[in-house]
Length: 202
Image (tube, rainbow, N blue to C red; front, side, top):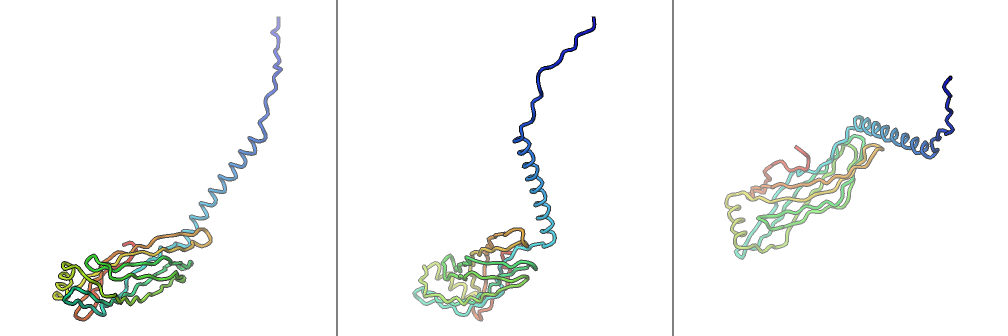
């Protein structure tokens, strides 16, 4: 006898339309993310953004005096430059604050209001820093007196500024420029001994 042919009575289940919609949406999102990444990478190569930075360009010890009671009076001029090396992006600086200290004693605070630096440009801030009479401890007064006799006074400058700039129309970048260095002077004539003092990476 010829074998009997069996017919299946079960219908194949059709894929739910919601599953197809979800798959299509995921595919579109994946392609969009890839395209955005490629565009951002190409934009980075074309624009070649540079991180803005701040540096001490010059300084002068205008006045320093300490009396027998250990009361210190000083006046220092410090030139700080904010540099933006980007040829296609402005940079915004804010929250600029630096402390100037001598032998661990803060003698002045340098601050600046928010400001803009144009494309491939710089802005200079000439801080003239007079201090109120500062009472020093005996050991601090002795250190200052020794520095005056050796014709070498060293200040510590420490602080930061926040900077923001745009990479074309692609994104906005924020960065904190930290400045920490030592400023050395010859007190006899007030001249500044140049040394590297910049937030720019070496």
